[in-house]
Length: 179
Image (tube, rainbow, N blue to C red; front, side):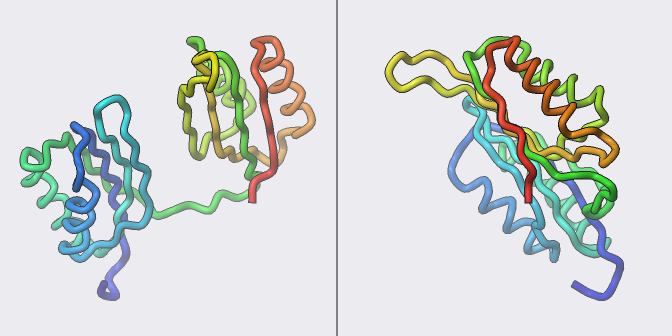
């Protein structure tokens, strides 16, 4: 990459799962002269879903945008690109992680995320899934999230609130400082 100012491009993609999607997208980014910096990928149902951030100078990112637009149909993906700022290093926040689990039912993500939002806690990353208990096959819900807690939030109070809300819903919760 030249000494030009580094820019960033967020790319989302979704389409039928098949082998080779990651290889094709990463090659497209590389051959345009950009760098794949950060990514999250998963198969949800029968669909492959991707969220990634590429970096490069303006010329490289413009090439990525054009090549993705030209390749959308061939790749069998719905694509969206958006220029963005670089990674931010938030000040005055404490990194924490949370894990909530219990019998699956509607509303768990909403209940946990709304409690955190009321306290000004940012969800930096969130993953949820339904797993089945080994012997009974009972659907078990698991939510794991990385949090950015404003330094002015009383951690003991937030922990009590989370614990009380989860106890009321018969959910297990762990809340720990992250590295």
